[in-house]
Structures are given as structure tokens and as C-alpha cells.
Figure (cartoon, rainbow, N blue to C red):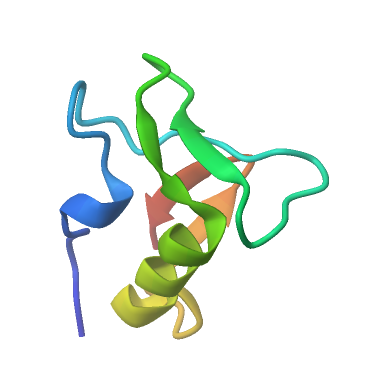
Length: 70
């Protein structure tokens, strides 16, 4: 099981894991870094990566756009 995030969920510019997720997010919604505004990807890409890295298995938690290792 992963204990660190791969680059897909981390901002390539500032390395933060704070995501700006729209209130009414759709699969094609753009997700931006809350810290620097850099484009991270579409919601379906970010969500898929989060799940593959343990998002449903109690490894990481997504709270207010911040990905936290549990």
C-alpha cells in the first residue's frame, strides 16, 4: 500500500497537496492548486489517482481539498 503520494496529486509547481475543488464538481471540472493556482488536472483524473493510491482504504483522506496521510 502506498504511503506517499505520486506526482499526480501533488502540484508540479509548488509541491503542495491543497486542491481547489469546485462546490458542484463534475468529472470534467478543472482542479487547481489552492496554493499557487497551477492546473492539476480534471476531477476524474484526480479522483482516480486518489482512489488508486489508497483513497478508499484509509491511507489518505481528502478534507477541504487537502490530501492528508492518515
